[in-house]
Length: 370
Image (cartoon, rainbow, N blue to C red; front, side):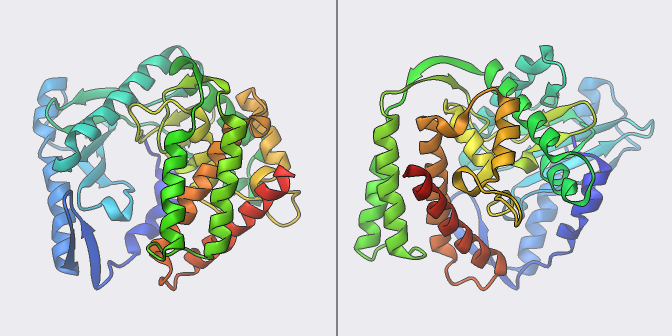
């Protein structure tokens, strides 16, 4: 599922030291633990995952011994409960062993795997678009063995075009086409959009900010974003759209690309049916990385006009004129800005850059509204 090139690029993540005192989120509460305790938890997760191999090998007729395990990238906040390993046999076959040990959310994790398998099955008949086949699955936990898909992340593929490796527009067209196929095989039929559940959350959060019960960056601007969401909701209300089961976490690091294939990994949804939300995630999950760079004309939401044109060409729809998509793009910005509330005291440059970016995106959305 992951290629050596990508992991060489990302090996620097392994060099990041764990903070002297960090927050270890288990399934029920936040515990303050030392470096040693946190590392012990990470090592335990790796050992628990590897312990499944003899049973997997027996069920699939694979060699139980003589295999090597290599840790692959896992979000730093999930290392204590999630393991992703490349398993390589002596004959050179490679597989991905993925295990999530999160007892409180076990049923949810299993449903995510159901979604993955559903997508993989639906994409089998689609040329050049896929999800890794699940070769073995534990019936009582979120442990699976999957095909190892050669490729690099779409994030890196897009970044490399900045240095002359590949054509940016073509990369975005391929991504747009693949996302369209994922949504097509996940079709949920015609639906009408009713924004009330979203607006209840927006109103509650806005009231908490006004009452001083929730801290956000630039509260007045944030409340302006809340007001914009209500206006976008009125424009999108009762609009008909074609529903599709969402991926749920569709950022560009969860899309793998090689010469002739685009593959989706790490599904985080089992019942959401707004494909527009998936696409908003692509552009804002790694904000500000995908906003228009200097020298590029900005378009909707601060994304380069040329990038929108290429992605929409691949996807086969004019997304930025769609009221429902515009609502979900604004909704994703609201979620991103809200999450910054817990990071206001962080001195990291990345947090500061994100604060500047969310305000810039809001300005672009307000300009587009006019």
